[in-house]
Image (cartoon, each protein chain N blue to C red):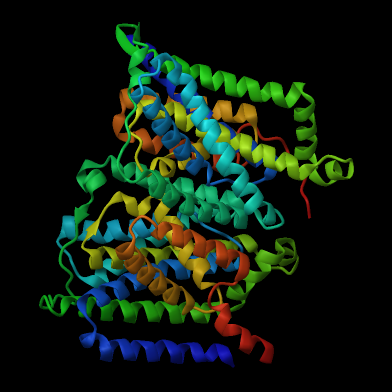
Length: 298
Length: 313
């Protein structure tokens, strides 16, 4: 019973983390039809920026409680600089190309950003464990969990519900839905589609950077962070259905629970099961669990 | 008539390698042999790319080939280069034949994502498999050829010769395949699949065949890489390895069966020199090169050579 309980808690924490990490990917695909490999770079950028900024904040002896806000500022700063640069500078000239070709272009950008990160931050690991340890821990069924994990869950809820609210209850969101539905007609109706692409790319990347920033205190920030997160996010997003917001939530919960089950009962299949579920979903519902029937276009 | 020059060029390069091999320094032989291994994988990807398919999981078959070769040595004590390559080809071909029934239905990003998932499944299995050395992998037995173990000064040359002969033989077969009706279907599938079906051909069958051929080539390449490097680990199935192969294929282009080998050699040379000069920026140069090629030379570097002839015919 206790083990099931801890499976549940672990699963919830891991799902929340995955959801935040993958949400931006599904948003960008949904609006722009880009499978964005640079998503992993933004995750890493967020983590590094958070490590530097929070490290500097704490080293100067400023109140450690405010470091949670500093993480947010770090993610914002780095995304607002890099994301518009990439979208305006390179991606916007590529929209006419095939989906697969754009995937390769973002892969090339990913390779470039990997080294840019190494050039800026070097190859040595960064540690900012203080925000992680600061909040103490809570106990469930005899096992202690760091309270910081609740922040991760809150972050997932805020970003998921916030995005849903943005899409369905605001003017910007409704116009964005129109762009998703038909960019050409939207343009004809006077919507500045280019600007919405810029917003979407920046916001989607911001979500990745946020996930990275809030993960930074729990891990050592080393080169290669982005490489691992990108395949995991692909798995989450593909399981739920590329471009679907509830799909990403479902995908995150499935992967989170499956992984937590395997960690507790069969640790040797931990990585295998995630991609096995992804392959199974692709095999039986190629467009993901939350996909709608699509009209065939000739 | 230009196509028929390819066998001559292949034979010429092979003869030059055989004759010049003893005079090439050991490190260069190593680079060329690895380029053959990766060139074989890229050759398979080229077949798929001609049909408009980009596999983000070709490392699956590369790794299968390598582990098949490794298992031969570890469990049966066989270190023969040719047996290793044969086993790599069989293991990869069999897996691709089965998975092909599923994958041949997929196009575009879904083909890429499903192949990615499959290669990550293998990665996930290998990482946790203690019998196969988990994340550390294991060492390969020293290479032998037909039961003879060459002396330490000659082993690299011997493996290079084996690699060159097998690679060029396979490249020649692929070259012939490209001339068959099934091979010529690839650009048609890329352009308009529905018309292919109306013509009476089965796009699914054609893709399945290409997929199996590509996997066999990758399996041979994996076995070759294993025996050349002498060590294998699960990273051979990780998605970044697949990315490397895609890079080589895009760099080289789909113009000729020689292109993937030239691309692989260029990649290995860039990799080695750039890594020596500046270990922290070589990926940056790779990424920039990929970007430039996709935008300005969508047919790859090979199109620089072919353009002159294309006008004449």
